[in-house]
Amino acid sequence: MSAVNRSSSSIRPALAALLPVSLLLVGCGGPNLIERLSFGNWGFWGTVVIVLDLVALIDLLSDETRETTSMAIWALLIIFFPVGGVLLYFFIGRD
Image (cartoon, rainbow, N blue to C red; front, side, top):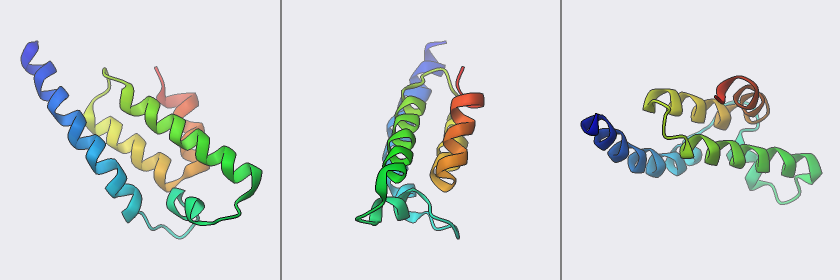
């Protein structure tokens, strides 16, 4: 069991390092998290979406029982679909 904990603990820093890079490389047709952050005047609801996305990503990265692939899929879902992804994560993805 210690080998499993050791391998998952070495993957978490790599995933944490890749998350900002994936934030910079996202580029779907709609406004993703980076596009929302790049606007200087996004308003109240834009701020709410950004805060909820960041809370969801922090909660996701702090979950030590989740598999790495599941964590990566949820992170990409939250990043590519900021509103729908965070709603799905809070209602379905959390244990």
